[in-house]
Image (cartoon, rainbow over all chains, first blue to last red; front, top):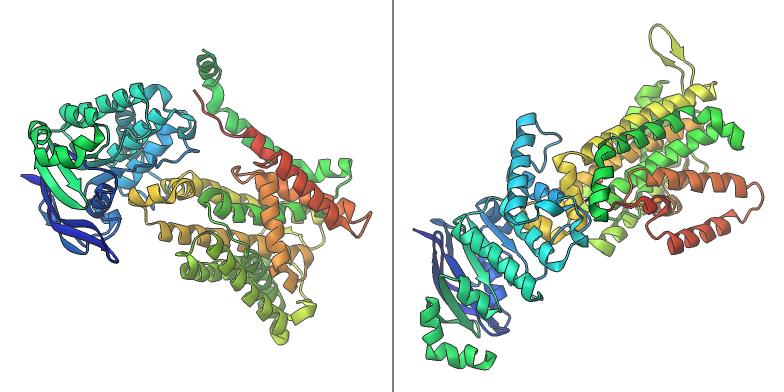
Amino acid sequence: MSMLEVRNVSKHFGSLIAVREVSLTVAKGELRAIIGPNGAGKTTFFNLITGFFPPTAGEIIFDGQNVTTVSAADRVKRGMARTFQVTEVFPELSVRENVRIAAEVAAGYALRPWLGGAEVRDIASVVEETVAVTGLAGKANRLVGELAHGDQRAAEIAMALALRPRLLLLDEPTAGMGEQETFEIAGLIRKLHRDKSYTIILVEHDMRVVFHLADRISVLDQGALLADGTPEQIAANPAVQAAYLGKAA
Amino acid sequence: MSGMARAQTQAPAAERPLLILAGIWVVLIAAPFWMPLVGGYTSLASRILVIGLAAMSLNFLIGFTGVVSFGHAAYFGLGVYGAGMILRYIAPSTPLAVIAGILLGGIVGSAVGALICRRRGIYFALVTIAFQEVFYYIAYKWDSVTGGFDGLRGFQRQPIHFGLFTLDIQKNDLAFYYFVLAVFAIVVGFMGFVLRSPFGRTLLAVRENERRARFLGIPVDRHIWLAFTISSFCIGAAGALYALLNNFADPSSLYTDLSGELVIMCVLGGMRSFWGPLLGAAVFEVLQDYISSQTVNWLFFIGLIFVLVVMFFPRGLLGVFRRRSAA
């Protein structure tokens, strides 16, 4: 059963064609990486999936339902959660409050003036579980803006998880990180995939992370899908090597 | 290490905000008794509460939703005229006047908010000024109803009858102070309650990061509109009290100057702090009261102090108690 199916999606900005007739299918429980040189259209493609803007042509099927014209907020309600290339958190609130807001909104409490005892306990258990999974239990009361970059990323992922998503989209989770932080975030993503069975789509520049984690890899180049396959197939693909890996190395 | 030590001493932290809160209320309840000792008087205390309530209402929007209105005197002034016109034309009832002021400020604010909640930043601020000018000119020009430039006179706050006894807020300044404090407590309590709710936390989310808030599934425009509406109802209450305080309604109560002064009070006291704007209003009003008795150029000194505060306390006077990580 596929979790996400993208059919011949294109995005034009005036005369610029940022994404050109891309199709791909992500299975439930799969970890899919999307790679490609700078300007290949990866983030645009991500924004199309999450509903940041509508595609010029094509269809997006999420969990069996056509969501092509569904707004970003409604896609979140249907179970799509994302993180951003530039960390997007609530810097002057604590880690716990960041996650709590996400959990409350996901539970449909955004307009509630108060919560009952059982509701408060449910939210608290989601928050504590999520904070623990992302390794932030010891820092839950710290203001997110005061944390190291890697921990801010983890907090952002925790917020996405608190939405109880069925599909998690991570836009360059290791961007701007040092060795140690990259290693920790990669470990977290692997844990979410292997132990918690999340379906994950990952845009990533760090090839070690990509080839280490991904079940399948899709390569974009100049807005078009260049190749799609297992890490072994992608590594052996001459077109990919020419367009991307050759240049990167 | 020091983090752990702090975590341990933080154990009673849950009680500390309650102690501070209790302290604030003791100071406010006792104000008529200690104010004279430091050169103040009861009606100045009433004035500080009223203007402080207006500043706190505005700060609900600026400090806790992250949306700046430079035209909030409009809804304050509508509260003033709403209360004044009830007393002047309809019925000599103080409670009715207060309710009318709240409703007029709140409903008009809600309608304006619905029109402008899609705007952001400087555009939002400019449109709030434009709407304020509209209401100012209505009050200024509509002589037969609002009294025009001369203002609306010929009404007085009325004693409040509780059946068994009567609270004479008309002649007794002390009774009036406690009446103002009671309304203040209800409105401020309401705002505090909202900010502690799941809905209130979505406002903080909008303030902190609108893009993130939207991608959590918060309809940001709707929540900005609701915050604007709540803020207008609350500042309408402050306006109604202002009409009772002065027994007079004039167009300057919905003029740009007051909007600017309210923003200054928020910045002065600290926008990230719930009580900051009240302190800002107190500093502003006391300085005005004191300096204006010495020189007509009192605004110069207020400006000077404002500049100094912004330079040395960029987060406002209460900003020195800035939130820090707890562990």
